[in-house]
Structures are given as structure tokens and as C-alpha cells.
Length: 111
Image 1 (cartoon, rainbow, N blue to C red):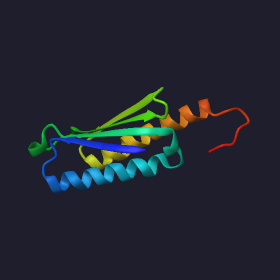
Image 2: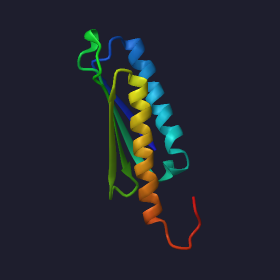
Image 3: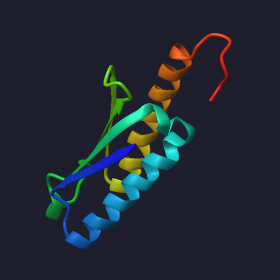
Image 4: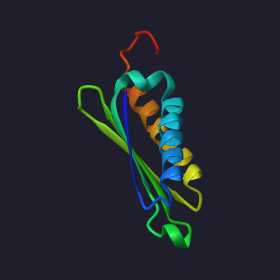
């Protein structure tokens, strides 16, 4: 699974690097055993009012499944970017779990 993390409005480059690393690590951890069905993932981190603070830190996670037949996406907004990352990755994990359960071969091995 290839992970691309994009950011806009993050206060400093150092903080941006920490958030990028955290987001990629958190997504891989959340998807766990299902990373094999994901071809590519894009994570967007946005803080439009960076110097002013507020409850507007957005994380959007999009995953493209192997074969390109489907993509799943989830958004989360909050006052803390790490919490937004956690929420968005958990939401996309639940979507992927539901998709995988619906498309698993009947009687086949569970993965």
C-alpha cells in the first residue's frame, strides 16, 4: 500500500513532518491485515486558520482498493489534528471492514 500525505496550513515544517509520519503510521496500524486490498491511500491534513487555532483541523483519508474498482473516504474535524487523524483512520477502517465482509468469497478463508 502506497501512502501519500498532503498538508496545507500546518504551522511549522517540523510539526508538519511529525503529523505526516503520525498519519501514515496510524493508517497502516488501523488497516492492519487489510492493507493488502488497498492499492493507494491519500491523507489530507488541513488547518485553514493555522495561526488562529480553533475547531477546524481536518483530516481526510481516501483509499483506492486494488484493481481501482472502488475508493472509500472518511473525514474528521476537530481542535486537535492528531484526534482528527485517529477519527478519520478509524472511520475508513470500519468502511473497509464492511466492504471486505461483503466481498469475501462465501466459504473461503477469512483474512
